[in-house]
Image 1 (cartoon, rainbow, N blue to C red):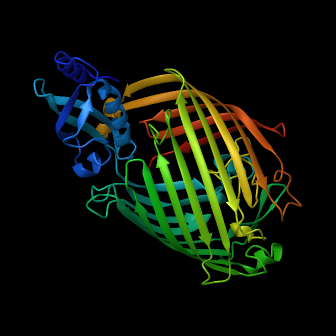
Image 2 (spheres, rainbow, N blue to C red):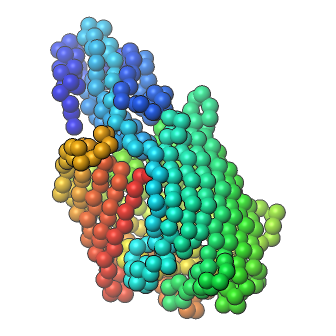
Image 3 (cartoon, helix red, strand yellow):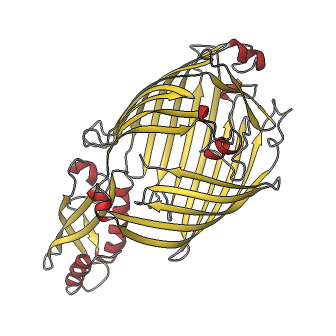
Length: 465
C-alpha cells in the first residue's frame, strides 16, 4: 500500500522531472526498529545499495518488493520503506526502512501427533494419546542478531528425542557463506514396519526400545544473490531395529540386517523469486536436489536420487491468483531398497491432496498441482493490550477461498503386491480456505475428493518458527 510520505516525496521529485527515465541517487539507508537484528543483516535483503540510482516511476513497486524481501527472512512482522531528506535539485534522497521485529525466542511445551498428519492421527488412531510427542522446545531465530538459529528439543512420548541444531548464515564479510551443524538421538517402542493396502502397519513393544537413531550433520551454504542459494551437506546416520520387527519384515534394512549405517551427501540449488515465501501470490521458486546415501564407507545402503521441482504464482487481478507446481523424483539405483528408505507420496511435503490417509511407496514419483485462490478478507485487527507483545498488536489477516486439483504417479517395480495406489494415476481435488496471519503463519482447511470416490476434510498449519 502506497504511503503518504512516499507520495509527497514523489510529487516533489516529479515537479522537476521531464520523463519516466529520471532517477535519484541513494545517499544513505536508515534502519529503524531493529533492537536485536544487525543493520547489515537487514540491508543484505534489499536489491539496492547506498550510491545506487533508482528510477522514479519504479519506486512504488520497488519499495513494495523489497519490503517483502525483508519479511521473507522470517525475522519481522512488518517492514516499510519511505523516502526522507529529499534533495529535489540534485535528485538525491535517503531511504528509511522501518521494521517491527518478531518474537525470536520460543521456549515452550511441545505437543504433537507422531503421525504423518493430523488426519491420520484422528481417523486411523482415534486421537490415541500414546501417539503424542510431549516435550520442551527452545528456538532462538536470531541468536546473535545475525539471523542465526539455535534449536534445542527434549522430547518424550511416542518418540523420545534429544536434538541440537545451529544455523549461521553469514560466515564471511560478503555475507554469502553460511554453515549448519546438528545432532539428534531418538528412540521408539512403536514403529511402522510395512505398508499394506497403502496404509502403514505398526509393531509395538512397551518393554523396550525397538528403534534407535543417531544422526549428525554438517552443512555449508552459498548465497551469492538475494534469489539463489547452493547448499552442500554431509550427514552420518546410525539406525538400529529390534529383531521382532525383522521377523515381520526382513527387508526393513534388507537381508534381515538389524543395523544400518550410512553417510549421506546432499547438494541442492534453489532460485526463489516469490513475493512472499510463506504464502506467495506472485513469482516462482525452483529447486534441484541431488542426494547420495551410502558413500562406500559402509555397505548398508547405496541410493542415488535426483529431485526437481518448480512452482509459479500469477496474480490474475486484485483478488484472484493462480498457482501451478510440478515435482519429479528419480532413483538411479534400479534395485530393491530397504523399506526404511523407501518413501514416495504421503508425507507433509510430498502429497497428492485427497490421499492424506494413504502411504504410497515407490522408487520414483511425479505430481502436478494447481490452485485457484480468491481473496475474501484482507484486514488488520488491532489487538491492543490483549496482546502483551507490542509488535504483534496489529494483526494483519488475509483469507482465501481455494479450488485445487492434483495429479500424481508413483512407480513401484518391486513391492506392489499388497498396495493398489502405486503404478496408477492418482487424482485429487477439492475446495478449501487458507488463512494467513502476520504474513508468515498459514492455516488451511479443505474438503477433498480422490479417484476412489472418497471425500475427506483435512486441516493443516504452518508456523514460521
